[in-house]
Length: 272
Image (cartoon, rainbow, N blue to C red):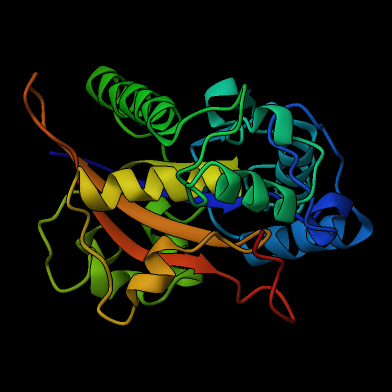
């Protein structure tokens, strides 16, 4: 079995987030001053976590957030980031650049509700889900291929991937043996990779929905149904362990450690 950790972070706030205006893919708004502060706070929170891979949406707000995180990192300052269009926000078509209230009015006029309503030129929920599944499947394949080709390289003087996660997310050891490797004689495998992803609110909700519904992801008992289906606040963090088996029909086993964590922020972030 091959295990990796997946840390997913939503981008920092933009001016349009604050004004509740839809950006989607067509409105490439940069971070606001608050957004840059949130990205820096996320970076400070994660500064001692060792990541082996970094992926980001190729839109400006996610690129700037990733940069804000990595520039604070003790181990990953010079890490190469792979920018992937599959991590982009849901496309909202004619509703991009318009207020969220206008999208809701369009949905009501069509006899539908958000988020299932698809405005003209936008992506359906199934299309967003397919895009997320495609990214996740390729990520799993990458981790498996790299794990089979070489042993995990351990940087001298640096903590292991699992130890650095357990130090920042102390409850991780209670949800997955990966972070307790070496404690109490555990024979669970260590982490083959620790992946950082920066993406967008609606995309993340879709991806997490795929984990929960299709892959039967296990979740902490303390998480309510509302928390599991809500949009992450800006720079909200979610951590998952993923177990992979070789074989065409093998399905990844996903375990949620935390979802939409915002301990690094002084107050609640915007949730739209």
